[in-house]
Length: 122
Image 1: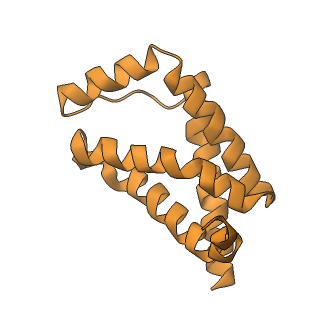
Image 2: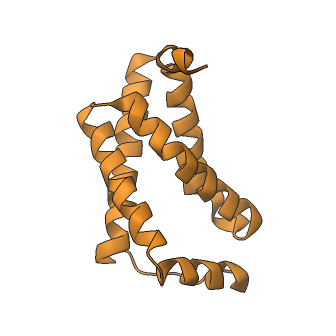
């Protein structure tokens, strides 16, 4: 189980670094959303500070996950982002929910794995 957790943490960290840095560099080609409302919403986010801020947070969290530092903190910081990723896809872009669902479920699994760290908060 620990090897699976290690592999999932590294994959999640790599995904976050790649997609977070893409928000600045733009090396992944843009794609058209099937739902035009999703495109309008995403375009509005891209035109403001929001997507850049999310990108910075994703890169930082991804790097923390990759170097195995402050994992419980990184997972808590990622939680609202992963929830919003899944909500965006559930409501506006369900066809492309796969990668977002992966991020959400791996984040949730890793939080459960580190649950003893969070117990004093409750």
